[in-house]
Amino acid sequence: MSKEKEKLAVETLSLTKSYNGKAAVNHLSMQVRQGAIYGFIGRNGAGKSTTLKMLCGLAKPTEGEIRLFGKPAEDSYMARRLGCLIESTGLYPNMTARQNMMMKAKCMGLTDEKSVDRALASTGLSDTGSKKARYFSMGMKQRLGIGLALLGNPDLLILDEPINGLDPEGTREVRELLLALSQEGKTLIISSHILGELSKVATHYGIIKEGNLVEQIDRETLEGNCRDYFQIEVDDSKRALPLILEHAPQMQAEVMDDKIIRLYDLKDGAWLNHLLIENRVQVYSSGFHHMDLEEYFLNRMDNLAEGRKGGEEHV
Amino acid sequence: MFNLLCMDLYRIKRSKFAYVCFGCLLGVIFLSYLMVWLMATPKGQETALKLGMLPLNELEEGRALLAEADVLAMFRESGMDGGMYSLTFGVAVALLVCGDYQGGFMKNIMSLHRQRQVYIGSKLMAAGILNFLYLTLGFAFNMLMNQLFRHMVPASDWRATLFYLGWAWVLTTGFAALIILLCVLSRSTTIGVLGAVFGSSGLIVMLLHSITSQFHLGGWVEYTIYYNLTYGPSAYASVGDLRGVAVGLAFLALYSAASVVAVRKRDI
Image 1 (cartoon, chains in turn blue, yellow):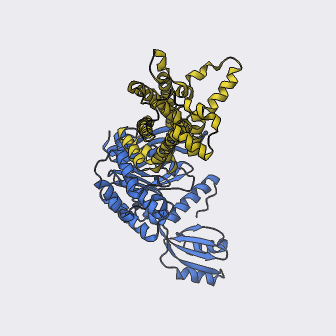
Image 2 (image 1 turned 45 degrees about the vertical axis):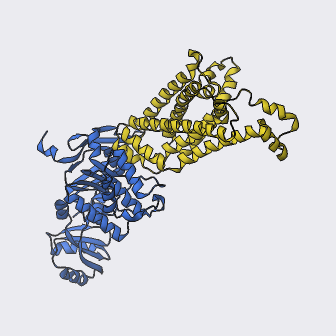
Image 3 (image 1 turned 135 degrees about the vertical axis):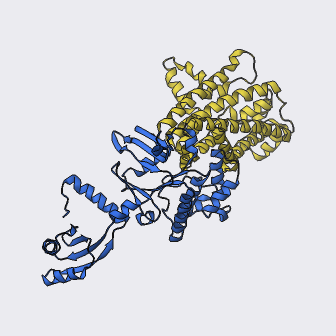
């Protein structure tokens, strides 16, 4: 086995899951390095949860292989190195937070109840007392789900929408918890639709679309790709664009729609506004923007869709 | 498997359903003793007459009820033979298994135990333990009731009692395997409970028996859990009396194997 492979916490080889002959996950080959926080993003129905379910052993792959820490996922020891929270939190509603934790601890064969108390403390649920889980708020249930995933000190955490339903304070607490876990050397795979929040913690990203992993990218490369741009909204982009390119031929421009143009590598926008107004092009708004993960993701999705149609509109 | 069994026992200990079902069972035993006391004992008949519960011409008939009864016969009459025990125990098993699916805790279990047959094994063991507790404690309560009702019936032979409780345990654990199969297939408490109702009452068995009997093909009924539990022997006399054990073990193996296939095939 190569050293490169030894460093991978998760590796999938042509992983496929089909339902009635239709592939929900299609020959997905993903690599997650040990210690990484891997943001797994995609639209609803893209195949994120199905992939994560297969990693957690909840769904059986139709084809392909999963390797956890270099070993087949079927290895029972590997399952103990993994903690997961998939979709809604799996709880016994008539039991308290501690009783739910005890159930999981017993299921794992843990004998030290201190590990249960530690997991409760780390998720801020120590003082829920005899309150039954069915009376918990969504945020509390989510935190209990994370606590259950943390039980047994796993090396790999797979969290599907972990900040769903959390208030801003709860979101911040979970973010800090995830960063602390990462500093302990744990590997995290997080799927979330709240991309702004995900970008605060993720070190690597995987983008999935219609069951296909379209891109795996690390934070540095993503930041390089997420360039600053100057966005200008005019009455007619078809008139404005030739005018701009006539005065700055080396500038990279992207026409978003009939009215919006994005210009990259522009340092000063004042002359541009002046130029357009002078040439009787109406400018509704203009300003510098930084492309964030959300915009990058949406652009990537749009480009893929346009690429299929064969109608890319890049200049 | 033992980790899962520990988890199940922890849950049984802390859940209401196990106690409620057991309470129902004890309630039925108490009511049976009360009814027999009212119908068959002189003091009871006096009370029943005052309450208008017993017509004068049925006094002798009532006294005959106790002629051949003993503690074991009372236990069988109070719920075992009529299917009340199977119903109560079946409902408890359905709630035990379907609870894992309803709240989604199954995800936590299956992510840890990828060899899914272990799950079925632990559920069968938990059901077997619960069955043992229900049967033995139920029988102990039955004896206590006999004491309370001033030794209304004589004690039964201890060997006969052990023999009966033994084969009844095997048969009812086989019935639990059926309920586990229904729950694993449907993941629905309603289906599990309905399975317990129809299975324990013998409704389906009797319906099918009446149809197949039309074609002189009704012999199979002697190899069902319901028939053996209702008409099985109270004491060991010959090898033929072990048919209940054989039927129980066969269904236990069959339903367990089917449950393993079902739980391995379906995603969570």
